[in-house]
Each structure stands twice: as structure tokens, then as C-alpha cells.
Amino acid sequence: MARATKTQKKQAKAATPVVAVRARSLWRRGRKWALRLALAPVVLLLLLIVAYRWVNPPITHTIWADGRRLGGVEQQWVPFEQMGRDVPLAFVAAEDANFCLHWGFDMGAIRTALDDGARRGASTITQQTVKNVFLWQGRSWIRKALETVITPVVELVWPKRRILEIYLNVAEMDRAVFGIEAAAQTYFGVPPAELTLVEAARIAAVLPDPKGRDAARPTAWLRKRTAAIADGARTIAADGRNACFKD
Image (cartoon, rainbow, N blue to C red; front, side, top):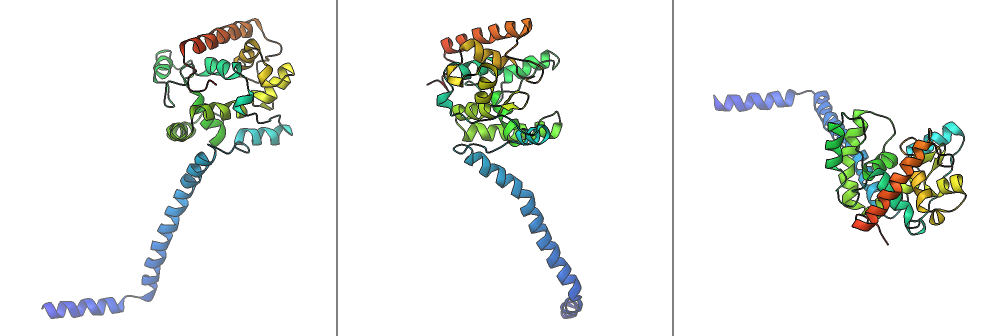
């Protein structure tokens, strides 16, 4: 019986159509290529994250989209060292006072936002940088999920100073105006290094609504917000929460 069974198996194997063998081979190859295609964006993203530690991002989706829609945008890269002391202080005070203390997510701010019924945002500067550089604007769970995955990787690869440098060069600060160099020139006619703390705080105060607020013609509310940001900047400098980016 054992011999008959082996013979039957051999005969069945020999009788297997050549087409079926080829189909299985094509299926295996297809799975390999599908896996490679699925991994390609991940590998590309990781390469970009590593590259951007030293290379400035040439463009972002938002800058490209606005440039195409508006016929051009204002943006000029300025190294962190040429921004002056007050610019990073003002923006950290305005957007992420604990920037130097967290690893990409400010859990205290998140809890406060949840307790407040999600009426206020809790995105850190790192999260905003990830969104601006690698993703797109707008609210969606897909974008937020990607942002949540990418943020710790960026924190791991980029120094805090580099995160802040990129953020200050790609953030939208007025209609068709991106980055602190273009914003300083547009609002006050000076380079970032010549901005006073109040001027830097006033630009920071237009976020997160740069199209609806004007740093050059501030409302009473914007002046009040500017004063709060300037006070926060002085506090951060005094208590050492600027340790990760100060000169």
C-alpha cells in the first residue's frame, strides 16, 4: 500500500499542469513586489528624516499647494544662528512652552485639552513640524495617525534645535508667507535677528490663524496675546526651559 501511495503521488505531481506551476510562481513574485511597494514609502520617509537632519527640506506640500494656487509664495531659509535670541523664545512660548522637556508629545497639554473638551489644541512644535514637512494640512484621522507615528522618529533623529529651525522656516505666518525670514520682512521690514521680543511675539501670536490675523495691524486681542507671549518668553529664558536651543 505504501508503494502504491508514493507512486500515485508521483503520478499526480507529474500530471500537475504547467500553467498551475507558473501561476503559483507568479503569485509568489507578486507578493514579493507588493511587499516591496508597501515598504518603499516607509523606507523613503526614513531616508528623508535622516537626510533632513542636515539638509534643508526643499519644499513642503503646503508651500507647493499654496504656490500653485496663489501664483507664488514668499519663503527664504534662514539658519537658526541668524534668527536672533528672541524669535525661538517667542514661538516656543506661544506654541509649546515645554518644548525642551518632552519627547514629541506634551502629555500634560493633551490631558488639559481633553479636560477642556478639546476646545484647545495640544500639538507640540515637533508634531507641527512633522505635519508641515511630511504630511498635509486639514483634520483627518489618517493624517493624525501618521503624525503620531512619525513624531517620535523625528525626535529621535533630529536635535531639538534642528526641529525648531525647520519649524521656523516652513510654518505659514501670513497669506503666502512662510518662515520667519519672509514674515519679519513682510511685517516689519527687517531680518529675524533685528526683531524685538515684542515684534517676534506679535508674529508668533498670529498662529494658528495666519490668514485671519495681522501682526502689522494688531487688534486689541492680538496685543494682549502678544504681551502674554513676551512674558512667557522671558519666563522660559529665566527658568531654563530654553536649554535645548539657547546659544
